[in-house]
Image: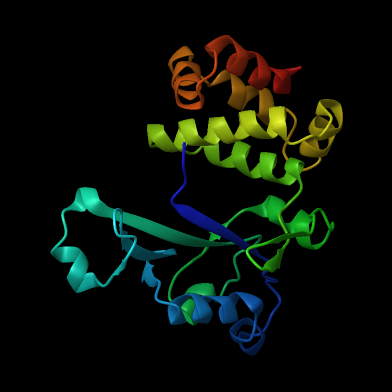
Length: 213
């Protein structure tokens, strides 16, 4: 379905002093994101490009270009816990995803080399936990469908054994919440996901329903 955002996860210890918070990896990364041209927009950062030429657009240039030709690339810094002084130090409150703590304290990540750098993507169960948390709070249909498609992909293509994936998921998300979230998916939701993925509605429904077992 495509994606216009890059999620970066960070550890943020609520016990850090103001000085520690200002010298954290989160703070240094935010400074670097702005240094390379991303502009703050609420809790995220954005850079605009021309869809056809791929050229980066300044704010002034973007005003002169038809919106249908503008591609917005977002970077979303996400933390496991919000520090009580985050807004005071950074000017905004970052999005929090508690399951991310498993990446840092539980070492639930893998090392991959992509784009000339070493990346630490979370293991499938952690990603699944974040998607189940977010899909239940979506108020925009296209975001909800995107989350459902991601859940389908994690269950079907991550390579993780389903039973193991579910047991690790239930260690991070209340077990009773999972069937409740899956039961909230409608027939129209399944049809939209299937349409976007180019697969059958019955297959999407069957795969996602495995979480309720």
